[in-house]
Length: 393
Image (cartoon, rainbow, N blue to C red):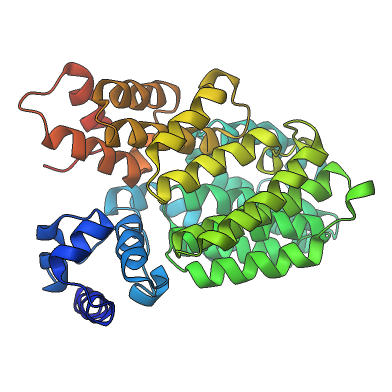
């Protein structure tokens, strides 16, 4: 990977007629980094860094990096999630018979009770209950056709959770099984949106973009009579198109998709949660959060902070994952503007609100790492955050 990336960056720079020094100036990436990168010294380069270099030499990001996945969960985290992954990868594999035959009502009630744990990022609690619930849902679906939709919903949520936890292989299987069992096109579209997010995290930008475009075309509603479910499904797919495009240096396509998503949000009228499904939460605020994310990816921290001022954190009602991801963008924007105390305050706010979510975020480690490098001594808040995000020495 490092040798291939080094060759592509070197060839792209030469074709653009740039020296290493000129590429560093145009991209905003340090000259020492460019030199080391072309020598193959870096085995793991952030997608945002690759995007800056690609933009400077005038090629899509995927021309430099065709497979740039986020690092999967470390061994300790993988061990914690192993029972859940096993229940996804090997359904109905438990040798002993259940004490009672699961029922549609029982499994549905258990899933309803567990749903707030997903939206609140209660990872420890979910690791304890999901293996049993997944196996009950699989047994139920084998016994009763009505159990199929319950299993589809549980697998969809589990795939979303495993994507957050960087258990990417198990997440892919869970989402594929959820898609195959989806009761209708709108449920399938919600699962596809999560599949696109997983592809983005795995660095498969072209796949994510093309999948989202295809499904957005398929579910595009007639605006004059569109339901909230239809607007949310279409809007989220457009946001995935925009996210994949901006990371691939396709800025015009990203803006066009975001404009269409904004039209869906305007038609929605306000932030809403269709069918009481937190994964479908959509509206003007959600679109603004993704607009800020695009601004951070394209290196416009001032725009991120301007958007954040019009959407204070206490007013944010989308899922905790989207809210927290936005706050990471805000923290990154503050750090890029050398407003380090504000960045630390924002990271601390996330740590207090979502202590189980933050350790899984490489983005948080990168932000804090850049701040720590510039400090001779660390404040107590910085030390606590370093432990929380598992900042390497």
